[in-house]
Image 1 (cartoon, helix red, strand yellow):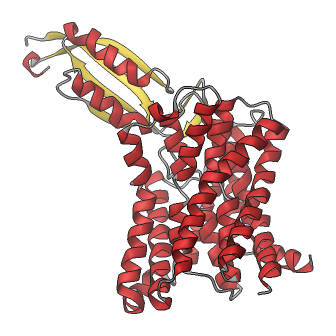
Image 2 (spheres, rainbow over the protein chains, first blue to last red; image 1 turned 180 degrees about the vertical axis):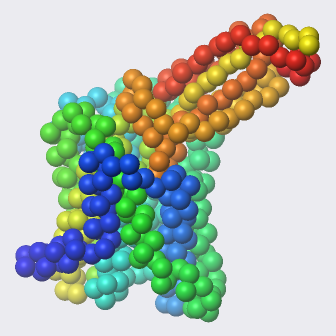
Image 3 (cartoon, helix red, strand yellow; image 1 turned 135 degrees about the vertical axis):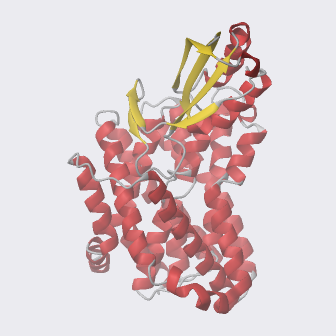
Length: 328
Length: 103
């Protein structure tokens, strides 16, 4: 327990978290501080490229083994399974309709790559090693949750989920810009290895945390605006789900990580992926596939509740749990 | 200068539906359209702004096209099939164009 508090305290006072807090406070206080849309997109492109590239380099250095393939499979299964758990919890805990519950569940089966990046940063700062291919696992966990949500809708008596999935939506999900960049940068890092990294390290290693701070400032602003605009929309029980679901999801990640025999950092990252909720890829897919669902509910919950929780308290908790479980 | 009557259709719709809407317009025989970014706004679904957003889920765009009056009905039917369930606004107004053969 002492370790969790120490890690949480250290995490809360890091420039990354304080930047997020600044953005959140500024938005809640109705400051006119804002990051232009184009700048925010540029920051996200930088972060996705850097994290993907470094993951590929790590795989090039350590080689490919069976655990990589099994980890990808585990990520796929977790992403497909977690929406079922989230849907069950939402229906039991809240009075939300099946449609809104399914849309929210899809967000919680998918992942937040920013939370993953922040967790990697915490692990790096603490000198805790992790498998470089976890980036690929993150990419594998983006899409299956969407299919599970549509299946839930079909099963709940809504219209046929398959009809909602047209060819364009399949392409948008599988070739989503974030996934293409993450997987592409991973492949480039894998192909070029340490030599490639040495050539561009001054660009993708040294400035990384500074860029992450600016990006999280923006995320804080967006989350704060969402919370302000949705005040009164989220019932207490829905808010509670936003805290409970990551704690449930992390246990699934912990079990999968232990079964796979991942390192301490690898287990922690799989827990983070299972505990996080998407607010980029899935919201867009849900607007196309389930337009009747209220987007303010799912976005505010994933970005305004679960994301800050994971960033501040969740990550230290997951790292401490992974350390206790693996003895690392 | 000689001008000709036409209809101006403005459709403000969720950014994720942009390509589906423009495909429907093309299928309805619309010869051209313009897509405009929308910075923010407020409506039945609450306030929103594009500032700082990195995903397309909460963004809106406006698609504008000019039509011959006799084409309006078929274009609106096609467009409405796309926008019906989504957040957005469809308006039609009268306008005059100089080169009627382009529409």
